[in-house]
Length: 324
Length: 281
Image (cartoon, rainbow over all chains, first blue to last red; front, side, top):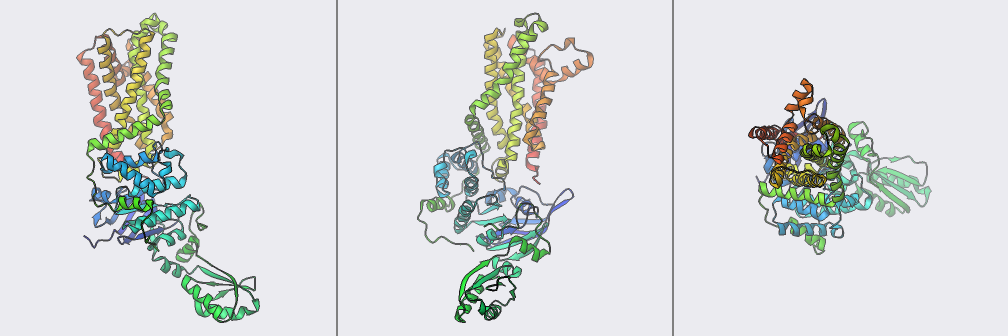
């Protein structure tokens, strides 16, 4: 049993009436890693997570959490996992402290242990100052952090985070990311869903891209990005007469063609791997070509989808924009 | 891409360490402990908005008691005082039964907010999420009953069976309301939306009016009378009148007991099945 992965699903399916939400998903998530499930709204991310968390029963296929079947051994699975849903599921009528004490008591901790845990977590999640405020008055980021604090309260071996940073400002989002990293550093396995490639890239060891209920690509962030190849290195030359020479260097090092640009001093070339881009810049300097500025951008979720599926991410609220 | 923090020296990290690296995992709480914990949750929520709660609990019985006694009482029963002796037990029933709506409303709010999603992934005795809240709601029913009874007494209501009869009547209403509330937890889980409270409220009002709470059924036409006489709320108010005025019969109490049993047996399990099966698309 020790060799079982944290999650293993085979042919997982779920329909709601006529709508097929999940259409045969196979996932394997190793213990102690962060696994990102990337996809637009309606791709089946939430349904998958809810089946794994024992909230929904699959129509067919199997799902195991640490070797335990999520249907047959739901109770055992519940003792090992914790879910932070898209709706922050904190109790808005209670204070942050009361929320955590409540959940600690329901996990089975004695009253003193529950209080201690609540205070430890409030400190860990930078919420100690808001300890006795009603959660309704919390900001979106504070609510999310309280929610994640509640998730790890029972020291679960696996936590599910369903779009943990959707709707958060950049500062709150970074705090949530730091929190996730700190939790993973202590051995917890995390499965998170996201609409943002950057988020998956920042946090996940492996990523599955899903679309219309199916996994359409799987791998490490680097593998995924290089297979998409959408990222690009942009270089502005100090001397635009060196353009041809620079173009040759870039083509040689990056192995991709240089795209035409309107400004003769600027060159853009596909660069899936940032390390390769660094080598390209070094090679330019070594060839005596001065670079005024450069930038490296990542492919957007839309580019990923366009490349993998041939269609754009079908979504209504802004997946075409990366998180800034 | 996971960055591992090299040192763990900040208070935040120490907090995380004690929570995540603690070796012992507690045993799951007993059903009783889980239920009481969730009753505590409901009580705190009530305490946090005590003014709203008081208004909610008192508004309806006070308005009905005053309007019906002083506007219609003379016409219904010859004098205000006569009518009050008949009506007060009825208004107690109405006050508590209308409060059961709020119990169902709380359930649908918890669903809408996703609070139940977390509870349902936790390994405690699951009915506690509902039973705990309902136990606390008994406190609210009790509050509305005591305050309404006190108002009735100050207006001139005199129970022939004294304090003991009143206390028994209130206990009977509490038992019935606890059972009746499962109807609205069922509806709350079925509709999933807190917005349907208006429609439910109108429906319950119609059921309350089709009972003998306000007037005796003996003057009603045949069909209506048959409906009113089979309404469990009529049985309850008849038994409550009997208890406060010392004329109660075993048959009257038996009918109420039957309703309580039937409500619990039907709507209790139904609520739990819906609670477990509820899908969130």
